[in-house]
View (cartoon, rainbow, N blue to C red):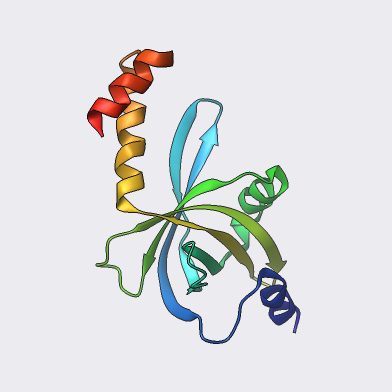
Length: 151
């Protein structure tokens, strides 16, 4: 019942599409270094909230050894880049900007609820362009001008 109550709080309703989650990766940001952490799934699903704003809810069952990572992410109340593979391993991973909303400790695992917004391919491309321009040294109005030219 505890899980059902959590889903109600996040706004899960009948008629939303649910898919099997087969892979979960989260970007870890330590100071200025970014790495992608892979979390082997015991089980998982992802729900399309179909709210017109591309919001999704992830329920992942992972080993208890990952508790501190997810607690730290939840306590920071910040969003992270989350990469999910839906339905089958051969599908291309989708990117979300998401935050950990709830963690339930079970006997040998943890249930993690992650809520976020799917990033479209166009958004991913523009982010890459912006990052490359910053690396090239563009700042201020010159950055804006160069960015407009690239997109």
